[in-house]
Image (tube, rainbow, N blue to C red):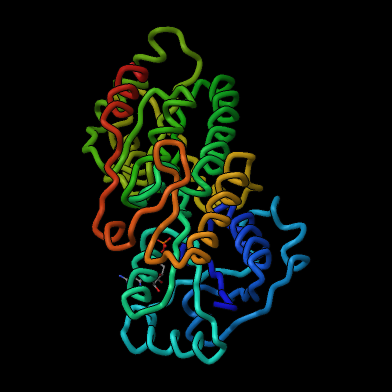
Length: 323
Ligand code: ADP
């Protein structure tokens, strides 16, 4: 193999650039030519390749987002779309591909791998819902951004004597909300994995005031049944009885945009390098991730069916601490 390509796909995550940089520089170190694919699988189908040398990936390690751009590509979900993508790679004599992204992107990587391409995935999503890595690129930075918002809201909540709600990302996975709630000292956490009665949230907030706290905060995941919209509406409708309103702050994409912290830069760098090393050894059809604190690999065929449920001990801890 003389040429490889790298792409970022799905939701962007802080640290993706550090992973791109590591793939490019370790690939060059192997004596290969390295190409970047712009805009994920959509760019792969459209033949949107750029040649990358060591200097092209200079000065990006501290930047959030992805210099290659990302996309969601419905066309790639079709056999025909993937055939086009393979043709674009073969035309350029590119024999290996590194896919930096979350679970959807790794399902795509698996599909390409089954069509005979040498593919290695790099675990990257702020949701941390990817099987094959106990923590994924971007999670730590997103969590720190959520914590900064919670800390600031506590200050203003204390001045105003108001209850605040912070909505963090997580359509199906409450990891960010749970961890931000634990580390931010929230009074309640509401996540998609567990049905939460708004009355329980109200009791938690009321209890905080009753014990003399000047602020009360609830952290919710966007995908929870009672997310920001649902809870605010409920509190408004039952305002008389509950005695207070909730002010909601939705962090949304703000969580993605930050400069990656040390943890994400180092994780991304190590995972990017590991992906290239696997390709160099002729090992592919794998996802590289953090397993028991070490860099490890899991077959993509397992990744696409594997589930990563929330750690029950963390759920229990949150219940105890938010009392
Ligand atoms: P993430 O990787 O962050 O989970 P998405 O779920 O949006 O993001 O997936 C990114 C892209 O991966 C999709 O737009 C699509 O092109 C591709 N993809 C997702 N699921 C599959 C699948 N089952 N088979 C092939 N490609 C897929």
